[in-house]
Length: 349
Figure 1 (cartoon, rainbow, N blue to C red):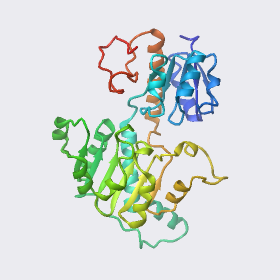
Figure 2 (figure 1 turned 120 degrees about the vertical axis):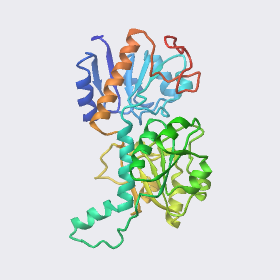
Figure 3 (figure 1 turned 135 degrees about the horizontal axis):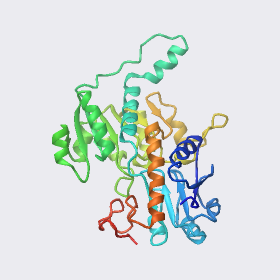
Figure 4 (figure 1 turned 90 degrees about the horizontal axis):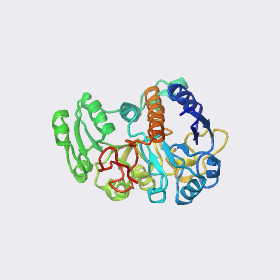
């Protein structure tokens, strides 16, 4: 195993730190690149049969063709989401594994941080005080207690968020195409349809994967069905929200608050220092002008615990591949593309 080489695309110093620590157990040869994977950089994988990528690396059909031509057999995602991989293009040629969960607490707690920052105007208060302005006019919030939160997607992150919000004394609604009624009963939340969730929720938080069905789940029509003055939180994927519709409804006041850890065209900007440059994306630039919008740079995952789990799971996925066994975290190409229905020990292809 010590002879196995892994090429890492789109890495930062913290990736190298945590993977270096986790690799003490495995002894792989790790090479880190700053470059993101795309059509222009795919050739850098020459000589590697295993590569690792992050959320802004793209495995399009053209990239998949190039990787296959170079002999790449495994793409190890350092994330749970995989909408940046064309699964049809890699089918029967390249295995793709992911980190299905690394810390639901990291994401859920970040969602709550966005809620509280927006509600109590912490971002605005911070800059006022730094400027010796101790006036509190315009900083009024509301009690979370007694308000209704609607959570879309009740995987581990969604359920963890519901557990936290329960501690605030909120009324809890949830939507999921595969409801877990037993868990809902035990935790004290209620599954409803989307229309009901939109109509009754004071705060809506998105924790569903990005699929054909969920792309732009927040759009002009769905926003129209929401309460006036609603708060929307997105720590999932940028394309869950139609940003132009979001902006229009921020302008009218229909949406009173938006907390975004993701943006649909984030790949050019997030994780990069552009402080000496400018934002060329007019939509993002407009979004950043609102005082009632808080944007963070896809950092919901960014805790010590989550990074350690990402590194450990990724390298464990690689070891399973090298040993030729069942890849428990492989993304399925034939079933529902999230959980393979084949028996353990059988390969998808």
